Length: 350
Image (tube, rainbow, N blue to C red; front, side):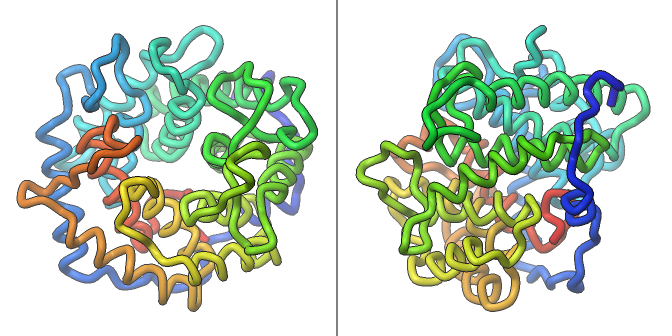
């Protein structure tokens, strides 16, 4: 990272991030490997010439988020930019994302109404890809991540009410926060730390504090301080648990209470529950918790996803707020959930 972007990360958190996974690789059943590979074949055939993947929404700008998720799906299976059968696919996707960065550092289409979603997801993807890239692209990515991290930190410091402090919302200037957008920004900060960025201790501490404030006595996590009386669900809870686990709070009482909530509230096939978002976050959260959480939750997620895969290898999204992402969204999120045990992505390490 350029010197002007270097920030302070506490030594204890650096150690937690740097430690290798402590368990042996979990076996990936042949039928899961086949499902993932079929999904990647579908994604490769549907990438646009400029490197992006299309959505179901007719909007004036491309989806930086869907393209980033699709790229991560290939890397989660062990494919590397510039090498192998999908090397060009990944390089084109990365170049596309880099081309969309604004002078402010924002990684998103200006036409996207939820730009910090795009920004956080794209930053995560670039951080995950960084160590696999050729020297020229790697330097471009580090420069882009430097700018992206600065924007994330500035957005966190926008004056907010006490219950929203430490989090993020749809826009970099939003005066409120929610757990979903916050989860992606914290993953981005974790990813940036992995590639050499020093993140301020205060930013991590404030982010963790915001996540903790979203937890209820049930162990589940709510969306925001003003959401529907504080409703919880597995998607929000998976987000909260994963954020805590990735930021050095492994096996904390809050993350374990969230894990217990997930065991009591199994995955439901209901469009209103943000199915693909749920399987993505719950799969990662369960893997970070390990033990009984992974042993119980993973088979349910895996079997549900295998049943939903189409004959062409894609995963279609039923009518819900997720439907705007289209099959590229459903397919990439399904693959990311199924591929967690491979641990090829740094963000998947325990």
